[in-house]
Image (cartoon, rainbow, N blue to C red):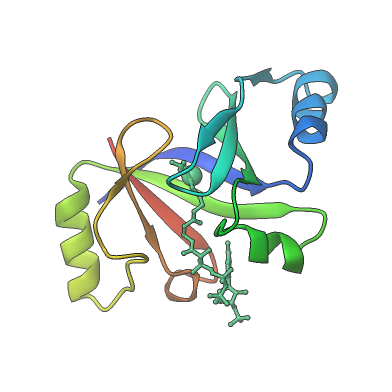
Length: 134
Ligand SMILES: CC[C@H](C(=O)O)C(=O)SCCNC(=O)CCNC(=O)[C@H](O)C(C)(C)COP(=O)(O)OP(=O)(O)OC[C@H]1O[C@@H](n2cnc3c(N)ncnc32)[C@H](O)[C@@H]1OP(=O)(O)O
Ligand SMILES: [Co+2]
């Protein structure tokens, strides 16, 4: 069911500093910041030959990553995103298997203008999993 690793997301307390580290220190190809108000984050993507790094910073009052940054003041790996061929079939299979789909269970349009879903970290080895429609 899961396919390509679409991205690894890192929550950062200072997006400008993180961009400078990935662009100037690590020589990465870094996108412009994208505000994603529906998700409560501003994101930047670092393009790699085989996947992407998503740098996430809270946007707005109810950002879902604010609590993560309170627990991890320096930031840290926040989630991993796998591509799936059919996000609805994947969702239904996972729910039937007892996995918790976060939010209202309906996919939302993510940073790549594709439907995305999130699965509870406690159901997947303590790691927040994002699924993105390929
Ligand atoms: C523009 C979209 C973009 C894209 O790629 O397209 C994005 O990726 S948007 C990314 C931001 N959106 C989300 O993260 C949505 C899904 N996240 C959530 O619903 C919450 O963050 C949730 C439920 C994962 C965590 O909520 P909260 O921080 O309030 O913590 P809880 O007390 O509910 O946590 C319960 C339990 O899970 C542990 N936890 C929390 N976050 C993570 C994490 N990122 N990785 C691993 N574990 C996590 C937390 O520590 C608690 O564990 P416990 O042992 O019970 O203390
Ligand atoms: Co993501």
